[in-house]
Length: 273
Image (cartoon, rainbow, N blue to C red; front, side, top):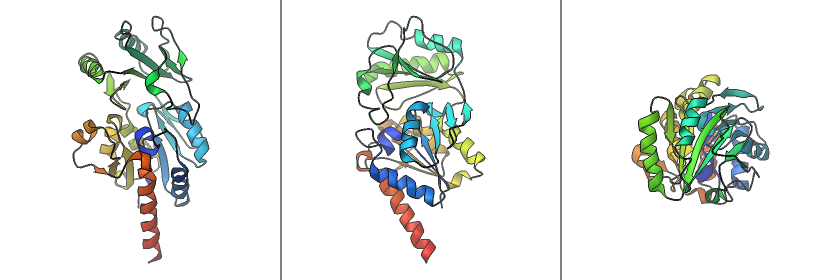
């Protein structure tokens, strides 16, 4: 039996409206009843995910900002790591004079954005978590967990991803939660490392972990888990990077909840045999 389940949110556990459905909520409640640990594993800010955690109402871990921050079910911080301030300034400066690119910062207290962000409209309706504006010419640099940029043209972001890998390879993990996103974390931070940390803390062997994802920022977690599954809407770059991943259905159809419900039902049958 799996002892630790970790799931990405947008494009995976959440539905097409970026909401946690009643079916998914009930499924997570059943996981808890069976004594299986659950972790939200997302690029979102921890204050955003805390609202979902409260809605679900079960003890759950929160892996946020792509693994730069980890909270225990009681809300205490297990792990938190910030980008170097000089490095933050250098990354932000790349995009200062790019009107088609918006720069987002996650620090320990807020989500900050350089301009109004149409690409993320509606994403946080269930939680009500919204960004604050900041002046890109005078960016705040303290306690930055993650930097990400958005652009309507994926080709432009790919150019910056190539530049970022050249300039910051020794200091930064570059990843993406979608074709319109490019994300910067400290080198040691990833969902995969977060899963390893949680498994070790819970004394769970990685072979007894299950992970769900759909985007490139899930790749490290899917590689680390004992069993890895993706939604059928997964980024083609992800399935290319990790051939053989099994797709379980579309996130809009509550594919993760349906899979876990089937799994729990099969375990219940085995227990009763």
